[in-house]
Amino acid sequence: MGRSTATVVCTVLSALLSTAGVLAAAPETADPETVIRKLVQANVDKDMATMSRLMAHDADITSYSVGGRKYVGWPAFEQEMREEFAAVQKFEIPIRELTVWHKGDIAWFTMELDYTRYTKEGAELKRMMLPLRETGVLERRNGQWVMLSFHESFRSAQMNGPLAQSSASSPQQLRVSNPGVSAMPDVSGDWDILEVEDDKRYKATLDKNGNGPYTQHQGRFVTTKIENRLWQGTWHQPGNDREGGFEVLLSEDGREAKGIWWYTRVDTRKNIPPKEHGGTYHWKKLSPSPASAQ
Image (cartoon, rainbow, N blue to C red):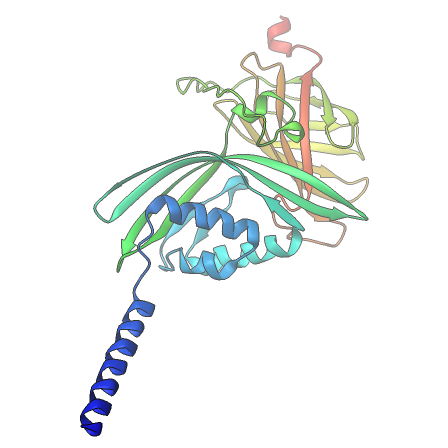
């Protein structure tokens, strides 16, 4: 009787332990939206382990971010995120809008969020908000949804006002640019440029291709692309040995532009990750282009 009881108890315990092991090993069954929100929160928390678990590590997966950045495979993305986590004191990333669709084991989404970074400059924290739009694809593997790839860009809505004043409590009305407009705008002429956070002003004189000097440390702008009012390029300042990039959105009449700038080199410090330090721009055209003046 005693042996039989002990055998039954052992059998029951063995079954319970086995069941517990199966439950512990069972894959998560969170829906795609939950996974996306967890990934955003992991960015806020600087939680690389969660990001790694919820993102695919296939060697050929390709994703794109702002500033012309491209990631092929997990290691490239992981390295930049670790650098970003080390450079930023804290993040605030409110999701303004998220829509998810899925069919079978594939899901896709569109999302708008305010990627807000606080970096330490001296004894102060400097706030920089990047108004982003993101699309991406997820796949369900062994019961677990994981992010395959994503594509980030700036959204135009936040460019309608000073970016530094944007916040999660003040949503703005969306404006969609006309996708049919493909003509290269003529940006030649004199521009008044305001660095919003530092209230610093200077003047740029540009040719029709968007290249030319500006009155700040012997600076010069070089435009790399203007498409559908999105204006991208680089800046160089020999006077204080610094250089970086910029991305602004032109108004429909081409008389104003608003967006962001960042460093890529300061003195001997090179390869600064895009968006690590920078600020926001507000450009106003002071004179008409030669073509329009004729």
